[in-house]
Image 1 (cartoon, one colour):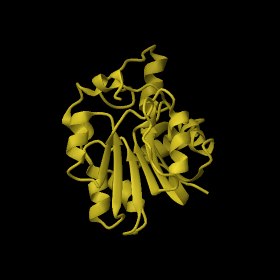
Image 2 (cartoon, one colour; image 1 turned 30 degrees about the vertical axis):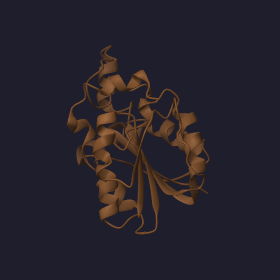
Image 3 (cartoon, rainbow, N blue to C red; image 1 turned 90 degrees about the vertical axis):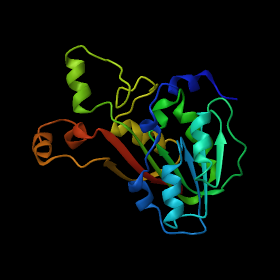
Length: 219
């Protein structure tokens, strides 16, 4: 069953669903026997790259937009059309060597519950790669000081976001699910000038992280 949430993505441009997370694929170990799960797989760009670079033999994607799922079917081993919060797919436990979730958890009503269901699908030692916008980014703080909290078509204040995270709360999402966070970094490196300014800020360099990237492991 697909929820009414699907309609919110109907006005998104193809650019929103395209592209591959090459940085995530680069971090995956070379394992031609691996099986990878991606939630919010979009049109399958990241999975196609992982398959082509020998990072896995099977790549399963999940998304809730029918047209995008049809595109992904041409690139991935398996694609499941579903809204994870309304109908969680019937998948075997400890099936996957890695989980990828690029800019997904902020779109969920209860990301904690969804991640709790995803963790049992992972093998011990499996890698988790995820990212989310940083609500404590300097641009948002500036707007708040002016009394603004305005939604936009894309970015941190995307109107389809239901949850927001800071680097600390995003890390907590994974540790509370029983995962061990091994690395955190910004999607784009911050500038030298920002590094100098960050020395005088309570949140340091994380103030300039537009997106939070996480690498974690299942014990």
